[in-house]
Image 1: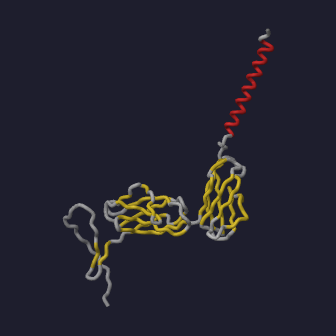
Image 2: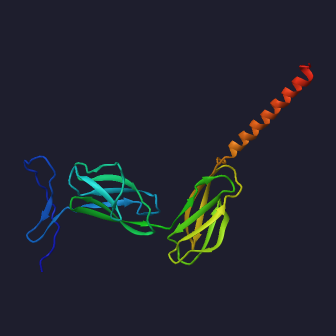
Image 3: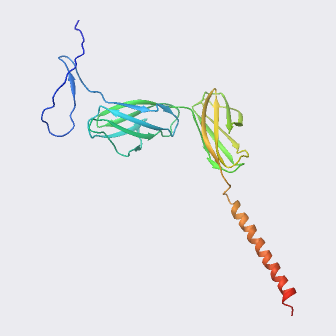
Length: 238
């Protein structure tokens, strides 16, 4: 049996034309190019999470395309290009998908490098702001199936007595309780797992101000009529 060994070696780059060059490691029987790879941070989260992708082992000055679940995603920077050593760093925002494991891929020509990202359970709320008494719809995804759901607003239960469906999803509504203006956490918990969102209590801008202005205008007109009547009766006598 042939013994395997590790050999450390150095080499001198001869005169070549400018451009990217691949380094090939080989012996009498085997050869391998230096591997392309990416890492992602974080490797799990919910929809809307910003993920940093770091790549190495690519050719120098190549434009990289980032895909999530086989779909191209917008990145920062908008054009991702490797540096002189074949490395790059970019970020993207996890697009809307159901909870599960998805492939993040760095692609250039026929070369790819992959990593897995896990979308965890999460909730969405609509609307995300409004006055006290506003009806808010909460939707949850990726939770334990057919399990009780508890939703709290600033730590106080506002939804209970419902269960997730067979896919671990739920939809429910509640009215915003009386609280001062500001931001408040909405937390849904199912079987010990939670998803959260932020609701902002704001002043009502749905026409209340216009009604007040109309009332004030009518009151001012009434006062003007009254003053005019007083003038004609008591001041400008015939």
